[in-house]
Length: 449
Image (tube, rainbow, N blue to C red; front, top):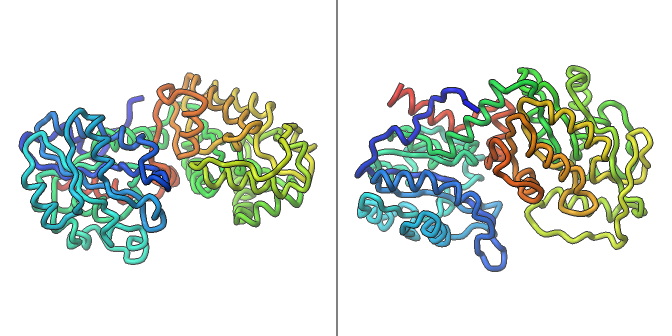
Protein backbone atom coordinates (compact mmCIF):
# COMPACT_ATOMS: atom_id res chain seq x y z
CA UNK A 1 0.00 0.00 0.00
CA UNK A 2 1.56 3.27 -1.10
CA UNK A 3 1.72 5.64 1.82
CA UNK A 4 1.70 9.41 2.20
CA UNK A 5 4.82 11.53 1.87
CA UNK A 6 6.40 12.05 5.27
CA UNK A 7 8.40 14.95 6.63
CA UNK A 8 11.10 12.57 7.82
CA UNK A 9 14.33 12.05 5.92
CA UNK A 10 15.02 8.38 5.07
CA UNK A 11 18.53 7.46 6.18
CA UNK A 12 19.14 5.87 2.78
CA UNK A 13 19.34 9.37 1.29
CA UNK A 14 22.32 10.34 3.45
CA UNK A 15 25.99 10.10 2.47
CA UNK A 16 27.22 7.86 5.25
CA UNK A 17 30.65 6.61 4.23
CA UNK A 18 33.07 7.27 7.09
CA UNK A 19 30.42 9.16 9.07
CA UNK A 20 29.58 8.51 12.71
CA UNK A 21 25.90 7.72 13.25
CA UNK A 22 24.16 7.87 16.63
CA UNK A 23 21.61 5.10 16.03
CA UNK A 24 18.56 4.82 18.32
CA UNK A 25 16.64 1.55 17.72
CA UNK A 26 14.12 -0.12 20.03
CA UNK A 27 15.55 -3.48 21.11
CA UNK A 28 13.73 -3.63 24.46
CA UNK A 29 12.95 -7.34 24.87
CA UNK A 30 11.12 -9.65 27.30
CA UNK A 31 13.47 -11.22 29.84
CA UNK A 32 13.21 -14.50 31.73
CA UNK A 33 12.98 -13.37 35.38
CA UNK A 34 15.08 -16.30 36.61
CA UNK A 35 17.85 -16.55 34.02
CA UNK A 36 17.84 -12.86 33.00
CA UNK A 37 18.15 -14.03 29.39
CA UNK A 38 16.20 -12.66 26.42
CA UNK A 39 13.20 -14.87 25.57
CA UNK A 40 11.91 -13.10 22.44
CA UNK A 41 14.15 -11.42 19.84
CA UNK A 42 11.41 -9.91 17.64
CA UNK A 43 12.39 -6.26 18.18
CA UNK A 44 16.09 -7.04 17.84
CA UNK A 45 15.41 -8.80 14.54
CA UNK A 46 13.51 -5.77 13.23
CA UNK A 47 16.57 -3.60 13.90
CA UNK A 48 18.80 -5.68 11.60
CA UNK A 49 17.80 -4.22 8.18
CA UNK A 50 18.64 -0.65 9.18
CA UNK A 51 21.81 -1.62 11.04
CA UNK A 52 23.05 -3.76 8.16
CA UNK A 53 22.39 -0.99 5.67
CA UNK A 54 24.23 1.58 7.80
CA UNK A 55 27.26 -0.69 8.06
CA UNK A 56 27.20 -1.63 4.37
CA UNK A 57 27.34 2.07 3.54
CA UNK A 58 30.50 2.42 5.62
CA UNK A 59 29.04 4.24 8.60
CA UNK A 60 30.55 4.09 12.08
CA UNK A 61 27.54 3.17 14.22
CA UNK A 62 27.03 3.86 17.94
CA UNK A 63 23.80 2.23 19.10
CA UNK A 64 21.97 3.76 22.07
CA UNK A 65 19.02 1.77 23.42
CA UNK A 66 17.04 0.93 26.53
CA UNK A 67 16.06 -2.31 28.24
CA UNK A 68 13.45 -2.37 31.01
CA UNK A 69 12.48 0.59 33.18
CA UNK A 70 12.03 1.58 36.80
CA UNK A 71 8.53 0.06 36.82
CA UNK A 72 9.80 -2.93 34.83
CA UNK A 73 12.81 -3.65 37.03
CA UNK A 74 13.03 -7.39 36.34
CA UNK A 75 13.83 -6.54 32.71
CA UNK A 76 16.44 -3.89 33.58
CA UNK A 77 19.68 -5.59 32.49
CA UNK A 78 22.84 -4.68 30.53
CA UNK A 79 22.78 -4.89 26.74
CA UNK A 80 25.58 -7.44 26.33
CA UNK A 81 23.26 -10.21 25.12
CA UNK A 82 21.60 -7.80 22.70
CA UNK A 83 25.02 -7.22 21.14
CA UNK A 84 25.61 -10.98 20.86
CA UNK A 85 22.25 -11.49 19.15
CA UNK A 86 22.81 -8.60 16.73
CA UNK A 87 26.25 -9.98 15.88
CA UNK A 88 24.69 -13.33 15.04
CA UNK A 89 21.82 -11.84 13.03
CA UNK A 90 23.92 -9.38 11.04
CA UNK A 91 26.92 -11.63 10.52
CA UNK A 92 29.08 -8.76 11.75
CA UNK A 93 30.73 -8.12 15.08
CA UNK A 94 28.65 -5.72 17.14
CA UNK A 95 30.72 -4.90 20.20
CA UNK A 96 29.42 -3.79 23.59
CA UNK A 97 30.69 -1.50 26.31
CA UNK A 98 29.08 -1.30 29.73
CA UNK A 99 29.18 2.50 29.81
CA UNK A 100 26.32 4.67 28.60
CA UNK A 101 28.05 7.92 27.68
CA UNK A 102 31.03 8.37 30.01
CA UNK A 103 34.70 8.63 29.03
CA UNK A 104 34.97 4.93 28.15
CA UNK A 105 31.91 5.05 25.90
CA UNK A 106 33.11 8.25 24.22
CA UNK A 107 36.53 6.74 23.56
CA UNK A 108 34.93 3.62 22.08
CA UNK A 109 32.81 5.70 19.71
CA UNK A 110 35.82 7.74 18.60
CA UNK A 111 37.74 4.52 17.91
CA UNK A 112 35.12 3.08 15.54
CA UNK A 113 36.20 2.36 11.97
CA UNK A 114 33.89 2.50 8.92
CA UNK A 115 31.58 -0.53 8.94
CA UNK A 116 31.92 -1.09 12.70
CA UNK A 117 29.20 -0.92 15.36
CA UNK A 118 29.07 -0.77 19.14
CA UNK A 119 26.18 -0.85 21.61
CA UNK A 120 26.61 1.51 24.53
CA UNK A 121 25.24 0.82 28.02
CA UNK A 122 21.55 0.61 28.89
CA UNK A 123 20.00 4.08 28.61
CA UNK A 124 17.77 3.34 31.60
CA UNK A 125 20.83 3.64 33.83
CA UNK A 126 20.56 7.41 33.26
CA UNK A 127 18.09 9.33 35.40
CA UNK A 128 16.84 11.47 32.51
CA UNK A 129 16.00 8.35 30.47
CA UNK A 130 13.60 6.68 32.92
CA UNK A 131 9.86 7.09 32.56
CA UNK A 132 9.32 8.57 36.03
CA UNK A 133 11.75 11.40 35.25
CA UNK A 134 9.96 12.08 31.97
CA UNK A 135 6.57 12.14 33.68
CA UNK A 136 7.56 14.42 36.56
CA UNK A 137 10.15 16.83 35.13
CA UNK A 138 8.68 17.41 31.64
CA UNK A 139 11.64 18.96 29.82
CA UNK A 140 11.41 20.33 26.29
CA UNK A 141 13.64 18.85 23.56
CA UNK A 142 15.75 22.01 23.60
CA UNK A 143 16.21 21.75 27.37
CA UNK A 144 17.20 18.10 26.95
CA UNK A 145 20.21 19.06 24.84
CA UNK A 146 21.97 19.82 28.13
CA UNK A 147 21.40 16.24 29.37
CA UNK A 148 24.61 14.31 29.93
CA UNK A 149 23.77 11.78 27.21
CA UNK A 150 23.35 14.42 24.52
CA UNK A 151 26.24 16.62 25.66
CA UNK A 152 28.54 13.59 25.62
CA UNK A 153 27.55 11.93 22.35
CA UNK A 154 26.17 14.59 20.00
CA UNK A 155 29.61 16.19 19.40
CA UNK A 156 30.87 12.77 18.26
CA UNK A 157 28.12 12.20 15.69
CA UNK A 158 27.60 13.35 12.13
CA UNK A 159 24.03 12.05 11.94
CA UNK A 160 21.28 10.78 14.22
CA UNK A 161 19.13 7.90 12.93
CA UNK A 162 16.02 6.77 14.81
CA UNK A 163 14.33 3.42 14.20
CA UNK A 164 12.28 3.22 17.41
CA UNK A 165 8.63 3.86 16.54
CA UNK A 166 7.60 1.62 19.45
CA UNK A 167 8.96 4.33 21.77
CA UNK A 168 7.69 7.27 19.71
CA UNK A 169 5.41 8.38 22.55
CA UNK A 170 8.41 8.83 24.87
CA UNK A 171 9.69 12.35 25.48
CA UNK A 172 13.26 11.54 26.52
CA UNK A 173 16.68 12.86 25.43
CA UNK A 174 17.58 9.79 23.38
CA UNK A 175 14.31 10.13 21.44
CA UNK A 176 13.88 13.87 20.87
CA UNK A 177 17.00 15.89 21.76
CA UNK A 178 19.65 14.77 19.27
CA UNK A 179 17.41 16.12 16.49
CA UNK A 180 18.02 19.62 17.86
CA UNK A 181 21.75 19.30 17.17
CA UNK A 182 22.34 16.77 14.38
CA UNK A 183 20.90 16.14 10.90
CA UNK A 184 18.39 13.38 11.61
CA UNK A 185 16.79 10.60 9.60
CA UNK A 186 14.46 7.64 10.03
CA UNK A 187 15.34 3.96 9.79
CA UNK A 188 13.41 1.38 7.80
CA UNK A 189 11.16 0.33 10.68
CA UNK A 190 10.28 3.88 11.73
CA UNK A 191 9.41 4.86 8.17
CA UNK A 192 7.41 1.68 7.48
CA UNK A 193 5.48 1.71 10.74
CA UNK A 194 4.60 5.39 10.60
CA UNK A 195 3.64 5.14 6.92
CA UNK A 196 1.36 2.15 7.56
CA UNK A 197 -0.47 3.83 10.44
CA UNK A 198 -0.71 7.17 8.66
CA UNK A 199 -2.20 5.43 5.63
CA UNK A 200 -4.84 3.67 7.74
CA UNK A 201 -5.64 6.91 9.55
CA UNK A 202 -5.58 9.44 6.71
CA UNK A 203 -6.24 7.58 3.46
CA UNK A 204 -7.56 4.06 4.08
CA UNK A 205 -9.02 1.86 1.40
CA UNK A 206 -12.79 1.72 1.87
CA UNK A 207 -14.61 0.42 3.70
CA UNK A 208 -12.18 0.70 6.61
CA UNK A 209 -12.97 -1.69 9.45
CA UNK A 210 -11.51 -1.44 12.96
CA UNK A 211 -11.60 -4.57 15.13
CA UNK A 212 -11.06 -3.69 18.79
CA UNK A 213 -10.95 -6.16 21.66
CA UNK A 214 -8.73 -7.22 24.51
CA UNK A 215 -8.76 -6.29 28.17
CA UNK A 216 -6.99 -2.93 27.94
CA UNK A 217 -10.11 -1.13 26.84
CA UNK A 218 -8.62 2.30 27.53
CA UNK A 219 -6.78 1.80 24.22
CA UNK A 220 -10.03 1.17 22.36
CA UNK A 221 -11.81 4.13 23.91
CA UNK A 222 -8.83 6.39 23.23
CA UNK A 223 -9.12 5.54 19.53
CA UNK A 224 -12.83 5.13 18.84
CA UNK A 225 -14.09 8.69 19.09
CA UNK A 226 -11.22 10.04 17.00
CA UNK A 227 -11.43 7.55 14.14
CA UNK A 228 -15.22 7.84 13.99
CA UNK A 229 -15.25 11.64 14.15
CA UNK A 230 -12.62 12.15 11.45
CA UNK A 231 -14.05 9.38 9.26
CA UNK A 232 -11.04 7.07 9.35
CA UNK A 233 -13.22 4.13 10.39
CA UNK A 234 -16.37 3.15 8.53
CA UNK A 235 -17.21 0.38 10.99
CA UNK A 236 -15.94 -0.66 14.41
CA UNK A 237 -16.31 -4.30 15.41
CA UNK A 238 -15.99 -4.72 19.17
CA UNK A 239 -15.10 -7.89 21.04
CA UNK A 240 -13.63 -8.85 24.41
CA UNK A 241 -14.40 -6.56 27.32
CA UNK A 242 -14.78 -3.63 24.92
CA UNK A 243 -17.76 -5.38 23.32
CA UNK A 244 -19.33 -6.07 26.72
CA UNK A 245 -18.95 -2.45 27.84
CA UNK A 246 -20.48 -1.22 24.57
CA UNK A 247 -23.46 -3.54 25.13
CA UNK A 248 -23.88 -2.20 28.66
CA UNK A 249 -23.88 1.25 27.06
CA UNK A 250 -26.95 0.25 25.06
CA UNK A 251 -28.69 -1.04 28.19
CA UNK A 252 -27.82 -4.75 28.37
CA UNK A 253 -27.67 -6.20 31.89
CA UNK A 254 -25.00 -8.91 32.16
CA UNK A 255 -25.60 -9.52 35.85
CA UNK A 256 -23.68 -8.93 39.10
CA UNK A 257 -20.60 -11.03 38.24
CA UNK A 258 -19.77 -8.95 35.17
CA UNK A 259 -20.62 -5.76 37.06
CA UNK A 260 -18.24 -6.69 39.89
CA UNK A 261 -15.49 -7.61 37.43
CA UNK A 262 -15.74 -4.22 35.71
CA UNK A 263 -15.78 -2.29 38.99
CA UNK A 264 -12.88 -4.28 40.47
CA UNK A 265 -10.77 -3.54 37.38
CA UNK A 266 -11.82 0.11 37.07
CA UNK A 267 -13.53 -0.50 33.72
CA UNK A 268 -17.00 0.75 34.66
CA UNK A 269 -15.77 4.31 34.09
CA UNK A 270 -15.99 3.70 30.33
CA UNK A 271 -19.73 3.02 30.33
CA UNK A 272 -20.82 6.69 30.02
CA UNK A 273 -18.52 7.14 27.02
CA UNK A 274 -19.91 3.94 25.49
CA UNK A 275 -23.41 5.41 25.76
CA UNK A 276 -22.27 8.68 24.18
CA UNK A 277 -20.50 6.91 21.30
CA UNK A 278 -23.55 4.79 20.54
CA UNK A 279 -25.79 7.87 20.52
CA UNK A 280 -23.52 9.62 18.02
CA UNK A 281 -22.23 6.74 15.91
CA UNK A 282 -24.48 3.77 16.67
CA UNK A 283 -24.96 2.76 13.04
CA UNK A 284 -21.20 2.32 12.59
CA UNK A 285 -20.79 -0.11 15.49
CA UNK A 286 -21.03 -3.86 15.06
CA UNK A 287 -21.42 -5.51 18.47
CA UNK A 288 -21.33 -9.22 19.35
CA UNK A 289 -24.67 -10.99 18.90
CA UNK A 290 -23.72 -13.97 21.08
CA UNK A 291 -21.09 -14.81 23.69
CA UNK A 292 -19.49 -17.93 25.15
CA UNK A 293 -19.46 -18.87 28.82
CA UNK A 294 -18.44 -21.74 31.10
CA UNK A 295 -21.44 -23.94 31.77
CA UNK A 296 -19.58 -25.64 34.63
CA UNK A 297 -18.72 -22.42 36.48
CA UNK A 298 -20.45 -22.05 39.81
CA UNK A 299 -20.04 -18.79 41.64
CA UNK A 300 -17.68 -17.66 38.83
CA UNK A 301 -15.33 -16.00 41.25
CA UNK A 302 -12.51 -18.36 40.25
CA UNK A 303 -13.56 -17.94 36.63
CA UNK A 304 -13.29 -14.18 37.07
CA UNK A 305 -9.77 -14.58 38.39
CA UNK A 306 -8.80 -16.69 35.38
CA UNK A 307 -10.01 -14.06 32.95
CA UNK A 308 -8.38 -11.21 34.84
CA UNK A 309 -5.06 -13.06 34.93
CA UNK A 310 -5.15 -13.95 31.26
CA UNK A 311 -6.20 -10.50 30.16
CA UNK A 312 -3.83 -8.49 32.27
CA UNK A 313 -0.63 -10.52 31.91
CA UNK A 314 -0.55 -11.89 28.35
CA UNK A 315 3.20 -12.42 28.19
CA UNK A 316 3.35 -14.90 31.03
CA UNK A 317 2.28 -18.53 31.17
CA UNK A 318 -0.89 -18.87 33.19
CA UNK A 319 -2.53 -21.79 34.90
CA UNK A 320 -6.27 -21.63 35.63
CA UNK A 321 -7.13 -21.04 39.25
CA UNK A 322 -10.54 -22.73 39.02
CA UNK A 323 -10.66 -26.49 39.56
CA UNK A 324 -13.56 -27.50 37.25
CA UNK A 325 -12.95 -28.29 33.58
CA UNK A 326 -14.53 -25.51 31.49
CA UNK A 327 -17.45 -26.50 29.27
CA UNK A 328 -18.10 -24.00 26.50
CA UNK A 329 -21.68 -22.93 25.92
CA UNK A 330 -22.98 -20.07 23.81
CA UNK A 331 -26.12 -17.95 23.89
CA UNK A 332 -27.52 -14.88 22.21
CA UNK A 333 -26.95 -11.63 24.10
CA UNK A 334 -30.56 -11.43 25.28
CA UNK A 335 -30.49 -15.04 26.57
CA UNK A 336 -27.17 -15.09 28.46
CA UNK A 337 -27.11 -16.30 32.08
CA UNK A 338 -26.64 -13.56 34.65
CA UNK A 339 -24.12 -15.42 36.86
CA UNK A 340 -21.23 -15.87 34.45
CA UNK A 341 -18.35 -14.07 32.80
CA UNK A 342 -17.96 -14.29 29.03
CA UNK A 343 -14.41 -15.09 27.94
CA UNK A 344 -15.10 -15.31 24.19
CA UNK A 345 -17.47 -14.27 21.45
CA UNK A 346 -19.87 -16.86 20.02
CA UNK A 347 -19.88 -18.45 16.57
CA UNK A 348 -22.77 -16.33 15.28
CA UNK A 349 -20.66 -13.27 16.06
CA UNK A 350 -17.66 -14.85 14.36
CA UNK A 351 -19.66 -15.34 11.15
CA UNK A 352 -21.08 -11.81 11.35
CA UNK A 353 -17.63 -10.27 11.80
CA UNK A 354 -16.21 -12.36 8.94
CA UNK A 355 -18.66 -10.71 6.52
CA UNK A 356 -17.24 -7.29 7.38
CA UNK A 357 -13.66 -8.59 7.26
CA UNK A 358 -14.08 -10.15 3.82
CA UNK A 359 -15.63 -7.02 2.31
CA UNK A 360 -13.21 -4.51 3.89
CA UNK A 361 -10.75 -2.46 1.87
CA UNK A 362 -8.56 -1.99 4.94
CA UNK A 363 -8.60 -3.55 8.39
CA UNK A 364 -7.00 -2.38 11.63
CA UNK A 365 -6.84 -4.80 14.56
CA UNK A 366 -5.98 -4.12 18.20
CA UNK A 367 -6.83 -6.63 20.92
CA UNK A 368 -7.98 -10.28 20.79
CA UNK A 369 -11.62 -11.38 20.70
CA UNK A 370 -11.39 -13.27 23.98
CA UNK A 371 -9.21 -15.25 26.35
CA UNK A 372 -7.37 -16.84 23.42
CA UNK A 373 -4.54 -18.33 25.50
CA UNK A 374 -6.86 -20.91 27.06
CA UNK A 375 -9.10 -23.50 25.43
CA UNK A 376 -12.00 -23.56 24.96
CA UNK A 377 -11.97 -19.75 24.71
CA UNK A 378 -9.68 -19.44 21.69
CA UNK A 379 -12.34 -19.97 18.99
CA UNK A 380 -13.21 -16.32 18.43
CA UNK A 381 -9.66 -15.03 18.15
CA UNK A 382 -8.46 -18.04 16.13
CA UNK A 383 -11.27 -17.84 13.55
CA UNK A 384 -11.18 -14.06 13.19
CA UNK A 385 -7.38 -13.89 12.94
CA UNK A 386 -7.40 -16.53 10.20
CA UNK A 387 -10.05 -14.57 8.32
CA UNK A 388 -8.07 -11.35 8.73
CA UNK A 389 -4.86 -13.02 7.54
CA UNK A 390 -6.65 -14.23 4.38
CA UNK A 391 -8.69 -11.05 3.83
CA UNK A 392 -8.34 -9.29 0.45
CA UNK A 393 -8.02 -5.86 2.09
CA UNK A 394 -4.92 -4.18 3.51
CA UNK A 395 -4.40 -5.30 7.11
CA UNK A 396 -2.57 -3.59 9.97
CA UNK A 397 -2.34 -5.32 13.34
CA UNK A 398 -0.76 -3.94 16.49
CA UNK A 399 -0.34 -4.43 20.21
CA UNK A 400 1.36 -7.19 22.20
CA UNK A 401 -1.63 -9.52 22.65
CA UNK A 402 -2.75 -8.97 19.07
CA UNK A 403 0.62 -9.98 17.66
CA UNK A 404 0.96 -12.91 20.06
CA UNK A 405 -2.41 -14.24 18.90
CA UNK A 406 -1.49 -13.70 15.26
CA UNK A 407 1.75 -15.62 15.79
CA UNK A 408 -0.12 -18.45 17.50
CA UNK A 409 -2.88 -18.91 14.92
CA UNK A 410 -1.48 -17.58 11.63
CA UNK A 411 1.70 -16.42 9.89
CA UNK A 412 2.75 -12.80 10.44
CA UNK A 413 3.83 -12.56 6.81
CA UNK A 414 0.17 -12.73 5.76
CA UNK A 415 -0.65 -9.29 7.24
CA UNK A 416 -0.07 -6.04 5.43
CA UNK A 417 1.84 -4.59 8.36
CA UNK A 418 2.59 -5.71 11.91
CA UNK A 419 3.02 -2.70 14.19
CA UNK A 420 5.38 -3.22 17.14
CA UNK A 421 4.59 0.10 18.83
CA UNK A 422 1.53 -0.53 21.00
CA UNK A 423 1.52 2.66 23.07
CA UNK A 424 2.73 4.83 20.20
CA UNK A 425 0.20 3.28 17.83
CA UNK A 426 -2.74 3.95 20.14
CA UNK A 427 -1.67 7.53 20.80
CA UNK A 428 -1.27 8.23 17.09
CA UNK A 429 -4.65 6.79 16.08
CA UNK A 430 -6.25 8.67 18.98
CA UNK A 431 -5.03 11.90 17.39
CA UNK A 432 -2.38 12.63 20.01
CA UNK A 433 1.04 14.03 19.16
CA UNK A 434 4.06 11.73 19.21
CA UNK A 435 7.17 13.49 20.56
CA UNK A 436 9.49 11.53 18.26
CA UNK A 437 7.56 12.42 15.11
CA UNK A 438 7.44 16.10 16.10
CA UNK A 439 11.22 16.09 16.70
CA UNK A 440 11.96 14.35 13.41
CA UNK A 441 9.73 16.75 11.47
CA UNK A 442 11.43 19.78 13.05
CA UNK A 443 14.81 18.39 12.04
CA UNK A 444 13.55 17.73 8.51
CA UNK A 445 12.31 21.30 8.08
CA UNK A 446 15.58 22.70 9.42
CA UNK A 447 18.03 20.52 7.52
CA UNK A 448 16.19 19.22 4.45
CA UNK A 449 13.03 21.31 4.01
